[in-house]
Amino acid sequence: IMKSEEFKFLSATGYVSFESNGNRQNGLYTFSNVIDDNGTIQDIGFYYNASVFGDFSRISWPDKFDELGIQPRTNKLVRYQLVQINPIAQFVLYIVSYASMAIVILIFVAIFAYRDNKIIKAASWRLNAITCIGCLLTYTTVILYGQ
Image (tube, one colour):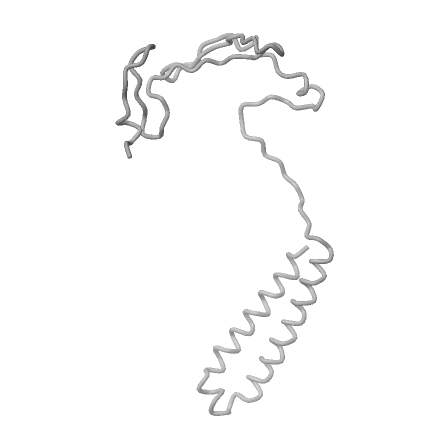
């Protein structure tokens, strides 16, 4: 496979080469409007070698832009939107979280109550207790931010 910067040729309009990102090197780009249903094109300006030339006051935006209240822009559109979880899924999430918290509390109490047992000592009851506390904090976070 050839790299884009290695792909060069002589065309009817002159020498053609490409940059490493695939853009045409020293390419001439024309800005145009399609001004009617027949496909008539009106040139507005052009871009060449990092310079922009043209009469951009001649840009005609589609009528739909006005109808839909769309404002043409040259920057990214940032739209903030509050997204909420489906109420049924939220209810299930809460039930599972509360049930899991209850199980973790029972395990924590059992670990603490039987901390002198040889098997529980061998399983590092302190580390298990800290893990239970971490689980409780995680489930609490799920409940608080799951709205």
